[in-house]
Length: 286
Image 1 (cartoon, rainbow, N blue to C red):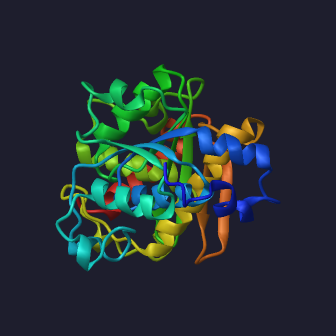
Image 2: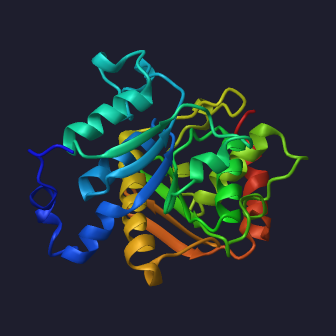
Image 3: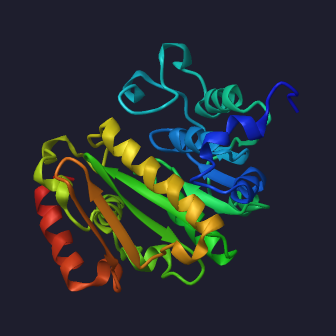
């Protein structure tokens, strides 16, 4: 405990938007964040600035120069340093009393339960293309009755889908199955979040390679995801009557000034989403 740090003074400007009682709840809550890269690292820092101070974080990667366009912890000094260690240190520079456990293994069937122990809320910040890790994390959290929040940057905006035990399963919602190729699963994942298809009006599909796990990104989409996730964390923990879970999907695009929020009752299995999948496969070379 750092005696020089005053929690109530550090977050006093939250009051008026939050009540003092709500701020105290935030300070006691525990959040597990999987992934410390494109969105995950900024989720951590933004949640720390809200006053959250109990975390479990996970990522096995190091920062690379290709991360500089969007990842909060990526800079000259953090090159080839572990993302978890870098983000841990950055968080403590804001609130030195943060209690952050570093989970040093990738999320998989054998350790997912351990990652979820004692947590109030899970945030999925796993690399977009790591479909198996997404599936394992969200399926296991649903089985334990823990809400999982997930947002995906899409061009100059983002989509958000939150899951809990009463939501459709992750695989059912996105129409995933063993018959799907890894590239098809990634495409279905993107289609589920991007229900407005706004980003397709300006993203060049020639820069998307599903097999190699490559696609374009820009910082605006990261910031959009962070706003959606951090606000949803408060809704789930403080104002649960406001929280929306799958089959609800929201998609915002700030370049086009458009948004859609609706119940996607059949997920990607519905006729419109199925049609979009066929069209998208033709546009994007695998």
